Structure formats: structure tokens, C-alpha cells
Image (cartoon, rainbow, N blue to C red; front, side, top):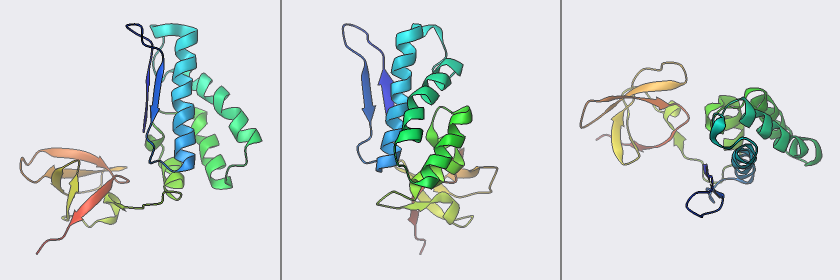
Length: 162
């Protein structure tokens, strides 16, 4: 949903955030990327990208938003819980991701809504939905029979069988 690039070859810090995100996803992604920038400014490349230093920066940057900005209660609670042990992506926190999805304008179908055996398209490939593992489903690419683990919350295009 976003990306941070540190300065190199004379180029400055660069942050990009997907413009099609809902306002709360956009805000959280921006804060996530800003935490990368401030972490880099303090520690350079000497720390892990999503390690303890980044987590501390993320909490520090997000705190004023949580305390001074009127976020919807569900978003504020989910973000606060997520920040206790932030991951590399807000998508990896099931509760936060589900709350943020409520605010999406175009709500697509998720893999978890399909039945086992249904065909679906994801990233230009066709898959067959398989059994649930934990938060992911074991799916098989239709052409290659290669197995993939796909997040249940992944938006997919269902393929209607004849």
C-alpha cells in the first residue's frame, strides 16, 4: 500500500502511498512510511526495517493522531492494538485490516467468501480455492498445479463455472 526509499545517488527520501486507499488506510500507510523515514534519519541502515526502532518510531508518530484526531472509534481501537506490536504491513493484522476494509468504497469479494473448490483470479492467474490453514487458504494455480497460500482477506475475482 506504500513504499519508502532512502536517499541514494543524489535522490532524496521518497515515500509513495497508493492513492486509491480509503482515508484511514491512507493515513496509517503514510504514518508507517514516515516511521521508516525518521528511523532512517536516526539510525541509517544499521537497524531492521520493521524492527524495534521502527516500531518505536511508528508509535511515536501515531500517538498524536490517536490522541488529538477524531478517528472513528473502531479505527482508533484497532490501530492502538496494532501498534502494541506493529508488523511490516497493516494487512498482516487481521483485526486492523477488517476494520479498515469497512471504509473502502469499492468492496470486492474476498477469498474467504468463496467455497472450497471455487475458481478465482488473483494477479492475473487462475486458482482453485483449497482448505483453510490459519489465516490463509491453500490454493492451487489452475495451469501449473503449484500450491500457494493466499490470505483469506485477499480480494479476488470469482470465476463462474459453467
